[in-house]
Length: 449
Image 1: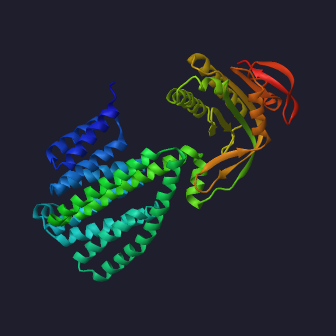
Image 2: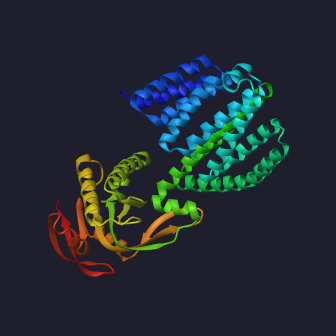
Image 3: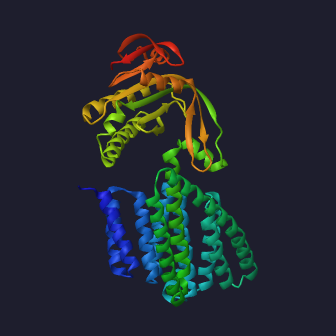
């Protein structure tokens, strides 16, 4: 498919596989191929990963000068991107390499960089780890800060700075308890979110992943008994990557069920207050004769049909800047105007409704659809303790539901309140006043286009 980005990522993964097999020549070859391709496409982020991989392999070969060359190149690119996490793990790699060449008393590297003075190398390593700890705390990465304090303890011990080593170890010990509690809370939150989305298989894979990591760490520990200097790189580089990936996974899971602004508030404060939004538009869709059609399909066909339609709806509402709230069986609820205000919320929702209607008509699948749209005020917030759910309430939502049920197949039924906001932007068919349960008679319109 001439997908250079995908090809470069695959080359990098092959290089990583060869690294785990201790086939360093092939590992370097594939990391280098990936780097060259990413340089051609200008993919700076993945160039950082390629340099990090090459630095790791050269360190395993005890080729410290080459390792530092790639570490510094990767660090410079991370600084250009403003990627503090990348800056952290590459700086840790550099500090670890300085410490290793001193501990191994590698004359070639020490002569090339420090005129043979291993204490200068250790001082440089100490300088890097002290700066990394500041960065770790700045970005809230207590996991890495904990490991970096432990590395700093070893470096200060080699420098005979026993008082400093004791202070660093105390900081490590204090942080370790905090990290344990944070990790426990993170795992509980992640498990709840995965359960919410029916990701039992993902949980099983995560468990297997942890076992794989334990096995790999065991192997690394055995290797570390033979080459103790690898402690610095193995702990700092791999642990930091693992934590970064797990944190990214947790953030992505939260963003799947919460608006970005609410997700950020929840992470910072541990809660999110319910709020009222006065200028929003709500869209409610439902499939026509869903019960009757579902009885004609086997479970796999039914779920596949709903899934394909809802995936298309997700793409459409994202395109128009709406927030998906939830699905209820075959119903789909979304809103525009929260948590960020949009002056054109009514226009956005109607455009999304037209796209959904057109998608259903062009797809010619098993379902027809009714769509109700309304504007007004809603209250929004998080409900539940064990399973996060962001929801909206109010007469505006109830009326949108009533408009949907009072509509017709493949029609967009709207209220007078939203009509007043968009009457100059679309074509309509006035339906007259129609009686609605709990609302009396209200003016309704079909949006023609």
